[in-house]
Amino acid sequence: MDIYILGLLIGILTFAVVVLNYFGIFQRITGPVVNDTFKKCESPGCVRCTLYDKVLANAKTHIEEYQQSTNKRNDIQREKESPNEQDIQRIRGSLQKQIPDGSAQKPEVFYLHGLTIMPWWTSNFNFSTDVKILEDNFGTIFQEFCHVNLDSNALWKVNNTPNGQWKVLHLVNQGVLQRNMVDLCPTTFDIVSSLPSVMTKNVFANIAFSVIEPGTVITEHYGPTNIRLRCHLGLVTPKSCSLCVAGSYSQWKKGECLLFDDSYLHSVVNEGEDTDQWRAVLIVDLWHPHVTLAERTILNNIFKPD
Image (cartoon, rainbow, N blue to C red; front, side, top):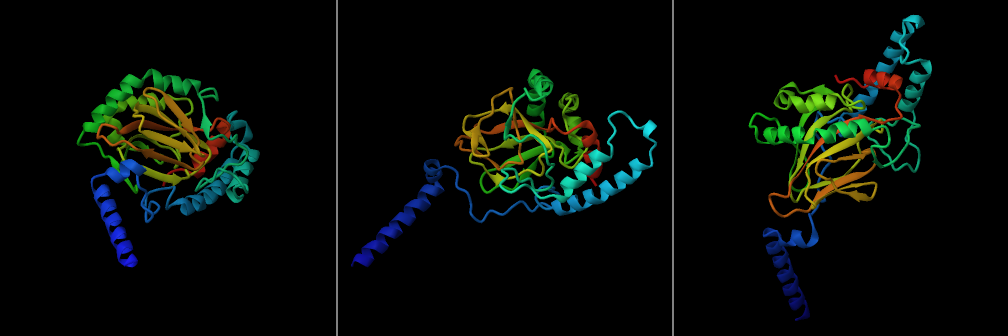
């Protein structure tokens, strides 16, 4: 009899959970549900997820080629900021070394040793001009985003997420200019291109609009490298959506920039329930301020897009 009652209670409880989940009530109580069977992105074009072995192998080949080409130049012809042997050796060493034990940074592709490490950054760290340009031009950028968000010709990419929907529209995708998309929002591209710290010429470089729908979970992951910092300009910023980097949470603010190092473990959850609680930002990848101009030249050459 006891077994019968227990079985009946389990059946009732299971039925209740199914009903609550069907109507979305269970998710409202517990928060967005992460699917344990969710797999890492398997997109064949994604540097972070599937191409990092190839990218690293190419970089090791390219740095040898780059050194040979620089050795052929006459020292007098070199520009003041041209890379020297020491610069090349530093980056070659980082291509061979492992990430330090116990490091909170675990980039999937390339770790440049010796850079200042912080999960969150502010404009005080050589980004004051970049942030000011973006925030001063918020109105123009927001207007072009609204236009492209409704344009049927815009090629939005829907990313793989366990819950909800996360879509991205690239102006620069992994160092490759997306000319058709730039033509849809040319002023935004011109504004971003004028930033002193913007990264555009290697596989780690992205400029994109990003939209996260209510109920979306972007599971914890690491970015591809620590030579960049990721800047988000808030466009549509509901309180229901938050970003977690290295265990610390923050939220976007409309018209303001948020800077973080995505080589730390990070994730996003939009707990919104209403259709108007979607989040939108402009993503711009910036050079880490302690990567020198000479090192940037080398890195652009060895991590150039195919």
